[in-house]
Image (cartoon, rainbow, N blue to C red; front, side, top):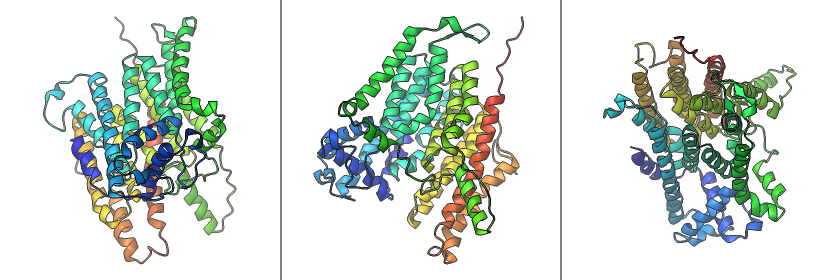
Length: 488
């Protein structure tokens, strides 16, 4: 089923010329220029701003790209998009996605508990099959990678593989794969605290029978092994640039704090709600004395309770995934210049949790639907409107039906599977909102005078749902208590 989605996605037109040009330009930079110029080149506005390991990946891909069309590898050929170039870009996404398929297979085989339902051929019954479909046919990954053009499937595969190795107790291997991930895309720094706390607590220390930490069990050898693994990957990635004295320049590209607080396409987070409130206050002439909170402090304060809980009571992969999800939530809600696509950092671990736990499944169903809808503005042509609606509807139908059956809570006349009446009503509110955005707004002649209204309405409406899911998951994680062993 995943192959059908991958190749179907590849047949769609690449609607986002910006993202397409970004990767074409990076191919050209890493192929045509010496390494010392990679992070200084600025012929295109889409300069290289990913970690060096991703630049090495682009250079490797460029060795194949030259056999499709050498002109795509010329730095000065801005916005170059020949048929051969488009074909190569799409094939490169599909090719790297096979690593994602491998990682999903590893997770289903090694992390999911065996179930009699796995023997069934019903697409809505087998937990392993459901996990595969929810991951491989994920609506967000499909449109971001195969229509909007990115490599998030490949990156998600690296993340999944690190989680699988952690579940197996292969901590050094887990640290290796996550460090590789950090050096491919630095957005994963947001979830790095979960790895740091878990590996330090569970690999460098031992626990007493009651679960408390044994401080004297600390192993300097294991800490050294972890440090050596991490530094080795960073050395391969950043080593040449450190040797050339270019580390400050590379870091300035990776962390461009001169960019505005919000991305051009507002992510549905706290800042979307804040901006609307601020604009409304300005329009009505109300003087609100609001001080913008410190970004780093806000993130740290939001993550700290989850870190402390993971440290004090680590319970295997479950507690780790919950902490990882909260870190992703915190970064999405309060981070600087957050892309709307960052919702995938939350959705992927939530899929893994939702198969075995009903409450996480409830949150996932709300977030996957509203998160998927928040990506609609990325596909902005009329031709793509029915495509994105159909894809989200199919994915949501499968998610609700399959998770409803697994957890034994089917749909009711007044509510969707696993959800309350109010939650169901909120999700169904997407329908009139999309009717207005796609039909009503143009029909009223507002597309030229107020073109930002549909994006604003989408971001704010989705931000309400994302905030609800964040608060609910936060409470669920921090209020969860380990079960006491039964007395004999």
